[in-house]
Image 1 (cartoon, rainbow, N blue to C red):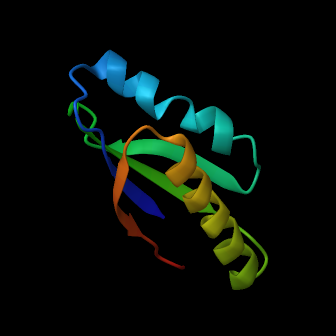
Image 2: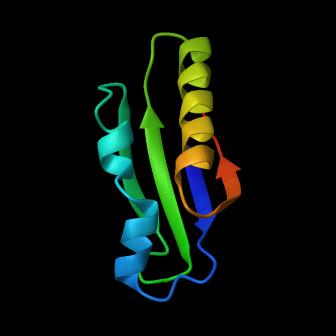
Amino acid sequence: MTFTVSLPGCTSLKEKRQRIGGLHERFGRNPAVAVCESGELDSHDKSEWSFVVVGMTKREVTSLCSQIEDKLQRTVEGRVLDVRQQFL
């Protein structure tokens, strides 16, 4: 699952890191989730994050993806522009 987030008014990479604020810590604690910043690394006002979610069933993975999306929407100081999911 990949999220693209707009960070309106963000003027520096330092501010970007503060606004995104600890996605690794929030989501990376779960052993079924791997997370990394995967794009827009040098952009100040946009960020892209990818999550790899594993589970025994598609239902379990879908549920965890929904939880991640909900939490991301509530905690990031920005606007989610795009969410892409791919099941393997």
